[in-house]
Amino acid sequence: MQLTLHSPLDMHLHLRDGQMLQTVAPLSAKSFAGALVMPNLVPPVTTKEMVQSYKERIKEAMGDEVFEPYMTLFFRPEYDYAFLADIKDSILAIKLYPAGITTNSEDGVDNFSVEALAPTLEAMSELGIPLCVHGETNGFVMDREAEFIPIYERIAKRFPDLKIIMEHITTKDAVDALMKYENLYATITLHHLYITLDDVAGGLLQPHLFCKPIAKRPEDRMALRKVALMAHEKVMFGSDSAPHPRDKKEAPGCAAGVFTAPIALPALAQLFEAAGVLENLQKFVSDNAQNIYGITPPKKEVKLVKEPFEVPSSYNNVVPMFAGESLAWRIAGGI
Image (cartoon, rainbow, N blue to C red):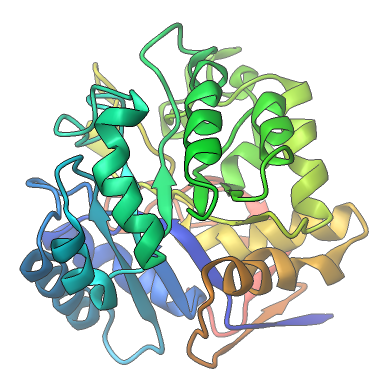
C-alpha cells in the first residue's frame, strides 16, 4: 500500500542555527516541500537583513532538496508601517511570543493590552501579514492556554481583517474559540495528537516528550483529533518540531521541545489510517495551509509506503519521538 502526498507543508518548525541547523534542516527538507520557520534564535530575527541571512543559511544546509523555507519575523510592538512594508516580501508571517514563556522568548511581549500592540497589528492588518501566536500566559501550567484565549478574542474582534494563527493548540477550549471568529486559524502538532500529560509524567518522566505548551488531558486530545482527522479548513499541520541535543533534554532543567520532523508524516499516516480517514491527510498537511496563507508551494511528491519503519534512537544526538519504536508507515527512500 502506498500514499502520495503532494507538496506537504509543516507550518510551524524550529530549525535552530549552526550545527543543529545542519543536522535537522535536511530531515525536514526530505519530508516536506516547505515549512514556516520560527524566528526565536539568539538573538531573535527582527530585521530584514537577519531574515535574509537566516534563509540563506537554511537553503545552504538543506542541500539540493526541493524545499521552501517560509520566513517569519519576531514580533515587536514598535514595528511601524514603513518597516513592515519594506520587509513584507521577505516574510510570510510575524510570530508573537509572550516574554519568557518558551525557548528563547525572553525578548517577547509583556504587555498584552490591545493599545500596546495596536501600532504593529494595524500595520500588519493593512499589509495582509498574518500573526502567529504562542498563546500562553505564565499562570498554572495546565491553564496557560485557556487563560490566553481572551487575548485572542480581543485581538480578533479589534482587527477583523488580520489573520491570526493560534499556534500548537492543545485544549478543547482552544478548539471552541477557534470556531467563534472568522479570522482565527490554528496549527496542531503531531505530539499533541498522540500524547497526554500522562504519557509525559504519569510514570517515569519522559523528557523527550516534555514540551511547551505541555500536553493536556484525554478530552483535549480528543478535541484536537476531531478537527485534525476531519481536516477542518481552519486547522493545518505544524509540527513545532523543536530539536535539542540529548544532554539538554536528559538533564535538570530539561529543555522544552519534541523532535518530530523526520517521523511526522509516517506517524500522521498511521494515525489517520487507524481512524479510517487516510484520504484527509493531504488537506491537513498541505491544502489547508495553502488556502489559509495564500501560498503556492514548490511541486513535490512525497511517497509513503505501508511498511514498518524502525525509528532511529537519535539523529546526530537529537532524540526523535518514538525513538526505538516501530511505525506502520515509512517514507519511500528512507530518512
